[in-house]
Amino acid sequence: MSVGRLVSRTVIGGLFIGHGTQKLFGWFGGPGLAGTAAMMESLELRPGKVHAVLGGVTETAGGSLLAMGLATPLASAALTGVMTTAIHKVHLPNGPWAANGGWEYNAVMIGAVTALAETGPGELSLDHLLGTERSGPEWALAALAAGVGTAFLTMAVGRRGKPSLPPATDTSAVTAAQGDTAGDPTTSGLTPRRPPPLGER
Image 1 (cartoon, helix red, strand yellow):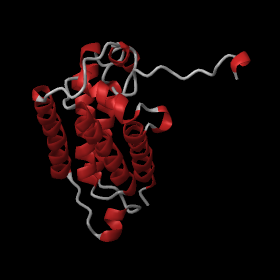
Image 2 (cartoon, rainbow, N blue to C red):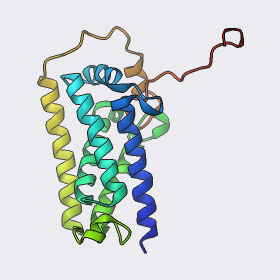
Image 3 (cartoon, rainbow, N blue to C red):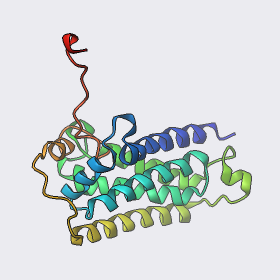
Image 4 (spheres, helix red, strand yellow):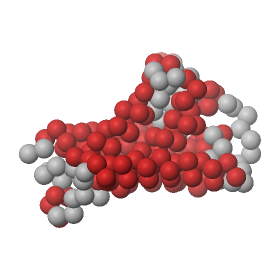
């Protein structure tokens, strides 16, 4: 019944949907498009708003496809690209460990989606239901190569892009993203919301 693959797909896919909607709509305490665009500019992914939309749509669509088990190699490639960008732009200087803001989490995600591209999404998937499943080592390698290659192409284009926002005066989000957090560079620098003092409620 491929229950393990179903659980993996829905958990990983759901997490990426969450990250994508944080960027696009500000859901789940996310920064929304304005905050994400500012972060993208600071990471030399320009124009920031274009890359904010691109990142949010890629995570949301890729996570949705993975969760449904539809076009699984494409979903794997999309999510690999996002994680490769996060590693290169934020986490690489910090070493591997997530506790130090490293790339451990991102690498695990890349490994997981590549494994799903090789094994296929399983019987409990739209690919299986529609007879469109594509899996095997060649599909896994193709998804991995496409994701990494697209990430480096996107970063190269972003470096040459024209800034669309004024230079940021507050670098706390960038500093935090490169510090002791793992995963999504556009949300890791957010300051947790605290309730107002009792006298002001």
